[in-house]
Amino acid sequence: MQKIFLILFIFLIHFTDAKTLQVDTKPLYDTRDYILYSLGENSDENITSLLSNTTWLKNKKSFNTLENIDRPYWEKIEIKNISTVNKTYYLKSENQFTYHLDFFLVKNKKVVRHIEDGVISKNSYREFNTNHMIFPITLKSQEELTVLFKIRNYNKINLHFSLVKKEYLIDYYQTYNMIEGLFFGGMLLMLFYNLFLYFLLRYKFYLYYVSYVFWLTVYFVGLFGFSQRYFEDFTWIFYISPAAFFISLILFVQAILNLKIELPKIYKLLNYFSLYFIITTIMNIYALEMRNFFFAHLLFNLFFIVVPILTLIIIFSTYYLAYYRESRIAKFYSIIWSTIAFMGLLLPLEYLNIFTSSIPSDYIFQFLILFEILCFAFILAYKITLIERKKNAQEKLLVQQNKLAAMGEMISTIAHQWRQPLSEINGLVLSIDTDFKKQNLSKHRLNQHLDNIEVTTAYMSRTIDDFIDFFKPNKELEEFTISQVIETTLNLLARTNNSKIDIIYQKGKEITLLSHKSELIQALLIVLNNAIDACLTNQSEISKILIETTANETHLTIKITDNGSGIKSEILDKIYNPYFTTKHRSKGTGLGLYILKMIMNQTLKGEVSINSSKCDTICNISIPLIVNNNITF
Image 1 (cartoon, rainbow, N blue to C red):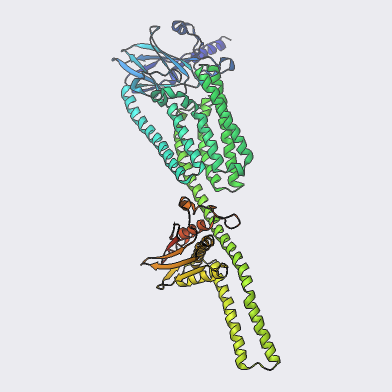
Image 2 (cartoon, rainbow, N blue to C red; image 1 turned 90 degrees about the horizontal axis):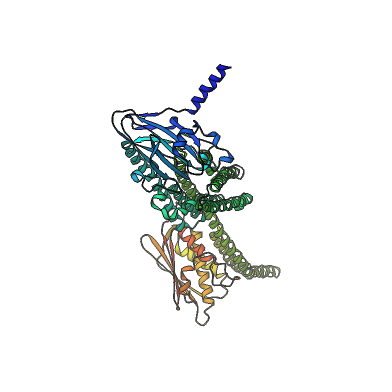
């Protein structure tokens, strides 16, 4: 029995005792093996009594109970200078989430120095003006002293200190400042680059991404102490930054994955998360301002307990979209976010005191975020590529629909106009039959009837050829003359131009092109149909349309002038916008000139310009004589 008590006594001594940290010439000492803990009181405590009558433990797991949630805890470190010279050291902490801390330097059971620090009481006179909590210690030769920390932080997270020399600290901060400069420089670069892309492309997910990067930057500025150093009067901005960047992330995910359409229930659920973050943050700011640590602590935990749940919901949503809905964007996102989230969860787990690491998770999270930001930039670039592909496909469909609409109108008109040549052929056949029955069908008369039929069918055949030229799907380059294209276009218009507006083609020098014949015909039809419509609204004059062509060594210019009603100057810069029209809904969709510009820029690799006055409207179409065959339209 005595042996058992002896073993328990030795274990208790070992459990409650810690060695004295002995320092000599080394530049760096880790204090973790020399720290003892004690549970503190909310009121002021007598240091002499604390040192004499308090039980000190080697860990503080027993402190993390609900009844102790509002109480601070003490850390004690015994330090002795065993060298023959005086030494100056600095106790430095990497942990940033410390609500309030009191530093006491005790010699001979008397407090010789007291410093307050932490989120709500930042020390304005930190050594080296650093962003970390840092406390100087001077030790004479063979002198021994006690360092006490009264700590009030969330979940009683471990707060470890390194004991370092000035030379080490200077070298450390040179490296630290360089790394932080690279981090914040990368964040700002991504922020301004994507802000520029938002103003250029006007896609909302770019705006949400910029907001996400901005608030992450603000969060890290506060986390690493820059807020208290440079923005002491604006601490509330840094209080709201965690909620702001999570909300921005939610908006970004909703937009980039199109959750409102793809997963509407998840979309609504994420909106509730955003509301939750807003409410808890407002309440947390109030608790901090009122110096109510109990509620600040509770709200802090409520905030970060939800973060892993939100992360898992987003990851599962991306995997569902990636492999069930086969979304390429979701596949990229799921891989990147799974990797980053797994490591990033270390931060809230450490804040909740569930996980501890020798490397501060703040730094791990910091560089994971930078990696994530870069990956998101690539995802956004890929998203733009997909949008452009979809846009090109829609524009191609739009052009084909425009052709089909034109075909429907032309077929209706041609069907009406073919009644006459078909009647003529029918009449000629009846004449041949009658002459044959009366035996009056001479060879000369038969040839005359056949020649008339041949002329009529040739006219009808040319109509079919014109349709084939206009509607054939071939996108290969063709060699043709400009007169062939214009004459084909005029033939198509002749069958629909019921108003008989005078269209004059001033044929000049023959010009040969290597281009896309069908698309050029379509472009000319759009311009000429608009010119005809303009002439119809200006019936007080003799309406006419003039077509002229000129060329230089590389380009052809087609100039089309009409004396119609003209275009008002205030709307001239809007005429190429899709669905913009000045016509009645029954007469126009507002897509003609939009399609014209699209054909000119993407297929014919040319340009179109329209100038208008009260007297006339001039449209100049400029295209290269030889089109580069590397097209994506």
